[in-house]
Image 1 (cartoon, rainbow, N blue to C red):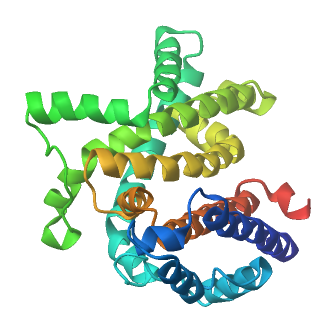
Image 2: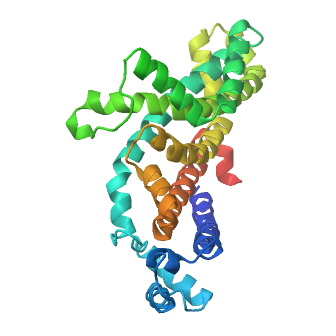
Image 3: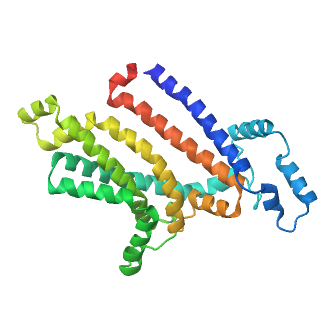
Length: 314
């Protein structure tokens, strides 16, 4: 098991190196000159040249990448071009709302999706099964912002059950914090629910057809223990895999969801940075998102050992 974990940890290095190269290239492949953007429309060539020198854009690409990569490893993600505030500080200030939204979305989506997937597999071919699969297709087809605006129109504006937008810190009370996260969590989690529910159903159907499930049923094992203890546990590896893959969907959806519901998180920070062409913020945010995605998938890879001991020796 230790060698399996070490191999997975070593596999993170080339992945993050590729991500770093891509993120670094963003500054140089994007249209326009960052120095000219900072200098403004009325800047002289001399002013632009000074800014390029201060940013290190006049040095060779390899030297720029090495300097940037070493600084990133130290946790230095650069300084915002417009506010002159370190990107690390800006991300830390916006991290709370994004983490809150991600955690509530994961809890809501995984709980609903796994439950629906297990029920659909248990009642395969029934009206419930067809309804769950219909929901899965619909949920995966409708964009996040469309779901968000529909929820805002009906739940907030028409029925006035929940706030339209905004965010409350957990320190201001649990219920105010939760009330502002319910709608964005459901809007962001719908596609996630659809993805996990379909894989859960398919994996459960495969396990429910195994001989040991029929044996457990013949011995009189009741439905709930049979579904949860025997079937779901053995169907967990594909489900956990798709949960990890769906984190990418979750990260991309955070950017849109935070904009729709006016949540001051990292996603909203990225949108504002794109509008102003603030490349250090865009680069830093992408590195953080990529690192989170890689680490979550690493944790999921390691968790396979506990659900399927055979993987430890693979």
